[in-house]
Image (cartoon, rainbow over all chains, first blue to last red; front, top):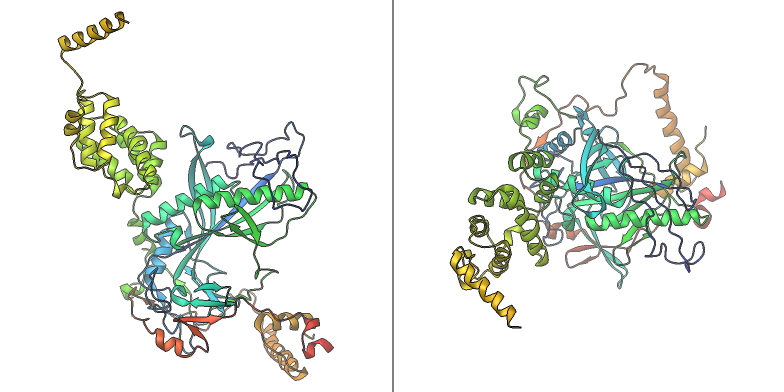
Amino acid sequence: MAARGCGGVWRRARQCGVGGPGSGPGPSPRGQRAVACNARGGAVPAGKSGLAPWIPVVGLEVHAQISSNSKLFSGSRVQFAAPPNSLVSFFDASLPGTLPVLNRRCVEAAVMTGLALNCSINKKSLFDRKHYFYADLPAGYQITQQRVPIAVNGSLSYSFCIDNKMSQMVTKTVRIKQIQLEQDSGKSLHDDTRSQTLVDLNRAGVGLMEVVMEPDMCCGEEAAAAVRELQLILQTLGSSQAVMAEGQLRVDANVSVHHPGEPYGVRTEVKNINSIRFLAKAVDYEIQRQIEELENGGTILNETRAFDSKLGCTVPMRDKEGKQDYRFMPEPNLPPLILYDTKSLPANMNHQQVINIDWIHERLPDLPSVKREKLVEQYGILPEHSFTLLNEDGLAEFFESVVKQTQMKAKKVIGWIVNDLLSYLKQHSLTVKESPVSSFLLADLLNLLEKKEISSTAAKQVFAELWKGEGKTPLEIVKEQKLELLQDQKELEQICQAVIDGQENE
Amino acid sequence: QKVSVRVLDHLEQLALVDFRDSEGVERLQKAIQFADQLHEVNTDGVEPMDSVLEDRCLYLREDDVTEGNCTKDLLENAREKVEEYFVAPPGNIPLPKLEERDTFLQGS
């Protein structure tokens, strides 16, 4: 099993001119890690500067919106953009006399996700009420699974490159504590000018899977890589579209630091992280902030902080002061959720009322890790390349399509995909689907190169021209720009001679 | 055993109930006493029951859209609205601390 936790070592860089304890906005942007997270795991001894090393501890709580037509406990539609309060049923608005009715599809999504993350699926799980007051929670409580969630004790393997080079990939594992089903809340729009909050309940009651990860990570890079892999898994399963920008995937980070051999430090919770990139930044900032605070003799408060993406720092969140008492109690309107497997399947029950874990397991699609292995095996590409292919939506399919249509070996084609095509796409902020160069055209170009009709330099030129999307074929461009490789021996001799003669005349 | 003022204050903050007077608190005390009778039952080796529904089948609904689109009806109950949004204060207004609020618990 890959190393769990990394014993990453952080030391505050000695900074001149930074204010004393408690002053200033936090870690200077010049601050830097003295030593990157140690991939081998285990604590790293104190370094030359003599400062005791710090071990950062990062745990994540990920909320993924379930991809379903209707909500977790009601029949109103799940949709991102819609007129305010148009996708709200009487139950969602918590009107008296309404009751929750569990959506089968949401349960299946949670089981699929649990299986994909190597969890034990609890054949009996329970629903609870978590109480707190907020304008976007009309019932005054959220229905969740606090005591016995649907899935527990899983793991998630993720990989990332050390030192930003695509040459060395490290694989790590984070333990999954549990996955639970719960309701999403509505949305609050703060109108500070009129000192009021506008509430839209369209999102209230949408099904969520909360994936709780143990604090096995040590830095922003690991957190980001883990979430990215989880996102790919969810998208592959179809249990969630997991688009962070649309709020379908939300991440809260729990961060603390301690010295090796000492107990874990006080942790803070960081919220309001809107992208995977910001997740890495927020976690790294918070680690640095805590180290500086402690080294300046300060203390860390067990508080909730928000990440400010503009300033690149975390700030205390108002309205979350003091420890919350959620007064958990069993949801009295819902009996236990019972799941079956082939052995325990009841004989005379209505199929529609039965969820068979084994049936779902048999139908799981290939997970990203399996897809990558297959790509490496089938095409002989490097593992790093398989990561790049799966990281970009549609890129793997594009690659395979080109390989089918060209004589060039897959090992050579891959370079064109992950270097040339991908960098052009990134430069122009395009997705693979929007690429002006189709797999057919690229295959055509690579065939010319493979048959040695053009040089590789010329091929890159042709590619640039193809990118303009003017509808010309590679051959037409080659002819236009006279990029054909000369094969005629006599002609080549004549040209060389002319060049030599030209030199002599100078 | 009486319920402490600290717990009563905590409950008033959390649940926004108002015990109002000693009669309200006495009613709570009696309710707790009544429930405490459960302790007289020997429950060794018995799994806790939290719902009489525990043997019922949890009904699973098909994932079809069958509700919603009743904005007008929902907003009819709202005292204040702005363009089909419900209006709420800018944030939670917490109950003032025990020392600062007008409650009979202060005197206790």
